[in-house]
Length: 64
Figure 1 (spheres, one colour):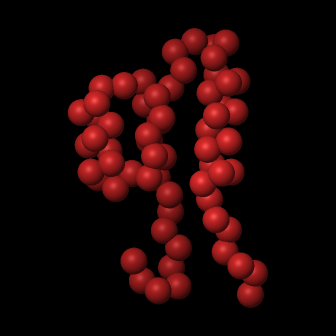
Figure 2: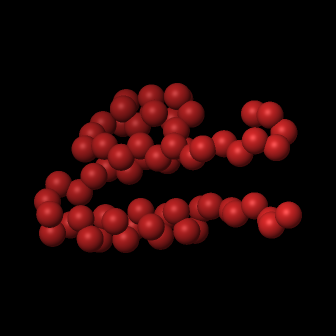
């Protein structure tokens, strides 16, 4: 990565919970892997977990 250029985080969201799929995504430089909720009722909780993950993981650059 060049100095001064920010990397775009890659979060893979998939229905697959297969360990080989997950390992391959990380091998390909994904930053995170999440298994999708399989029913509509679970989507709110899933989305909340994704938002929590994002807010706890990111670091914003300092203002110039």
